Image (cartoon, rainbow, N blue to C red; front, side):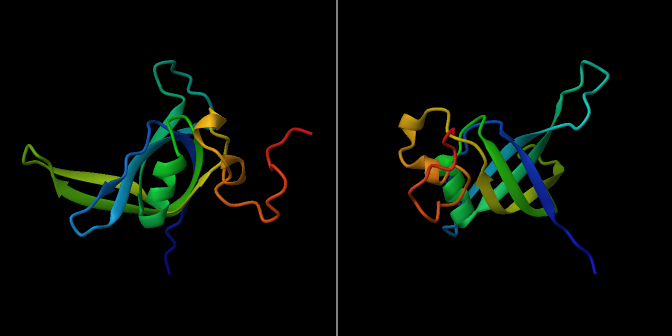
Length: 137
């Protein structure tokens, strides 16, 4: 038995853009910056890993509706490797995370842009609906 499960937390590197395939499926490709556990000794090295991800269907729609560059996201999915022919005719190989679930883990930077986001800022609705889960006490 083999297990292929990935769970990452990082920040979106750009605003997600929803696309529709020729068969009518919604998809979004996005990259998250996952902070390295230890700071690199070489200052030329980045402090983060940049992980390519793809989400389909409702997850893609959710991310495009509420995600934006810099937002903290949690991604759960599986690692996939695929080959394709690039426009220059060369074969390329890609390893990416195919997201089964995408969650937003912080508040939007400007609450005016996303009314009602307090309840879905963590990626799910508040059951009671009466308390702001991010309210300071």
